[in-house]
Length: 197
Image 1 (cartoon, one colour):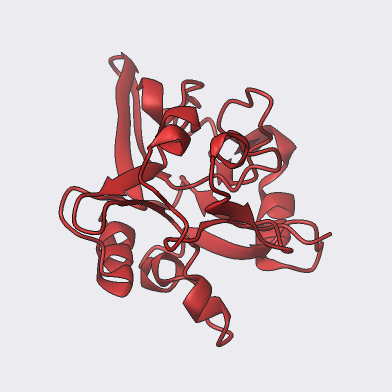
Image 2 (cartoon, helix red, strand yellow):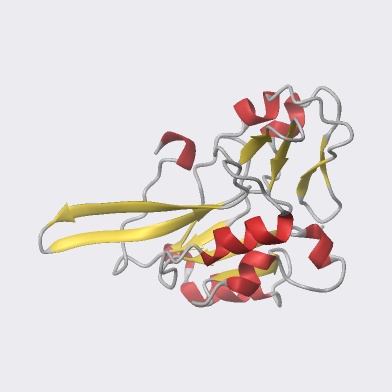
């Protein structure tokens, strides 16, 4: 079974926020709503050994997504290729999925009165394009593809980094699929999810 997801190389990410801007522009995301948010982790350590890195956060497209389980209308659903999406026609804006997400990856749109999130630019995928954030990344830090396909960009990036340098958000039984590459020379991986930072 396919699992489309992102791999983000934190060694390369320069915190330019191009991914945030591209996401907002491509998806017409209103002010105060984020599908993609870049956090600054650090600085941590003691001089002269101080580290800081940027952590872009998105929906983790969990294999066992808690947002899917709590949605009372079936508005949150999973595609055949493992992506978690929201059917805005079915969403009643109850925000139960927002509360269930351990990563704070969902937003309530005050204009449309529904919950929204990263779609990995599904509309671009349908015309064989990559998500806007991947295309806009000037540092080449974002990879998109099927993590179950060893020939995909994401699988190749993971293999090149080595298992000791590949991280994910804390798994609380939901099995997040997004992977982050971070070598110790860049920074120490922080284990708290964004909702708790």
